[in-house]
Image 1 (tube, rainbow, N blue to C red):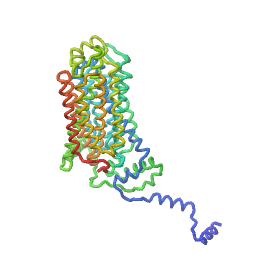
Image 2: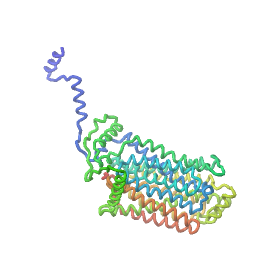
Image 3: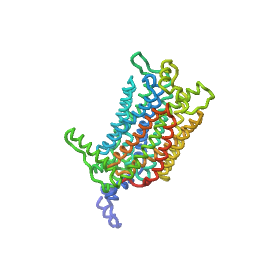
Image 4: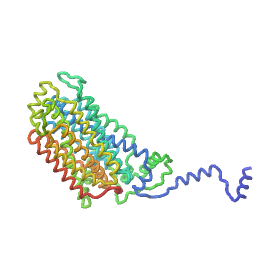
Length: 537
């Protein structure tokens, strides 16, 4: 019967195929690549853009938000912790700076390790260091021990920040990268809002317990809650893939292809075998391998590779870009963190002053001898009067929400108007608003100008985050981010130490230093090359 059907089909001029033949042919067609070999940009574009990328951006955003929480939580708790830890204004500046000292060291170490051992694994470790040190710090009863644990927490934060950008950017096609990185940058605002809400919900209330030898009150509980986002996102990241670009750089081609196939399947719902690329290349990059041998040999090789990676940033081809990025990073973080991290303290001083002197109009620099110097602080602690005004925490929350419009603007227009546009505009405007804070005389005007400062500064950070990930080649990307962020941390440290030392003595000096550095950084931004919609190298 089967023979008869075949003969009849042949007579009709066609060929009847069995089911197995049809399936085999279909599979062969699906497995046949459209392009045998592609560069990485075309390979990542071929995966489509869908669920995986949205999930990745959400994870990167939450990781970025957790870093913001850990940084800002210290400045928010300063008024509440000053009596327990016996802090003067100089101590507060040192404590804020201590976090950035840890970030400066951690950024370089973790960033270099990320270029050697992989973005994801090193990112997980840095997030866990941040979370665990943050939790332990809540139990520290003296300023030196508390400072030490916050320094260690800073080590973790310093590593996760450059690694998040390097990791996420390497999964993004050129046309989507600016928007994706801007979304992640916007999560910094989410972290600021979250920490302000947590502070308002926890710090003003009499919770916890206090004994003659041990204190575990509301601001310590606040610290534990603030450490949870880093811990949770560190666990989630364990189940994410390594960067395919990094794997290609290490000669692990099959693993990279497998990850790209899985991304394609998640984004398109098509089977992974139909992914059209079979071979991916990265031009002009030497494959790097990881050392093996004794622990000391591995450590030595890590140090040597880290030094070579850093030294390569100052080669003739990259020297100009590296120096510009070092100065701009230093300037923006001196200005932003020098002033921004003092807003909770300054808001608290202003609010306490206005509670005692309703109707008065003063600037923040008129409050030198009000709740500011060491003698006054000591008497406040002994008297037991309220040293944290809830309205000051509300003001902190308002300034945290203020960058929302500018974040949305950068998300939708970063790839249209360009990185340099937002960087230059932001730094010039934030410098001008910092200059104006010195002159305002009312609580409302001070709050408005502080919101403007935070909003316009955000655009600069978002642009700088994109530039930092795009200006340097793959094999140097994490190291470059770490080195430029090292300069940024130096700026943040200097800003906090300058403010802590001078805010009660020569208040105008740090204000004007912030304004001048920010404007100068904006002018330097004009000299950077354009990276908008340009493929990663």
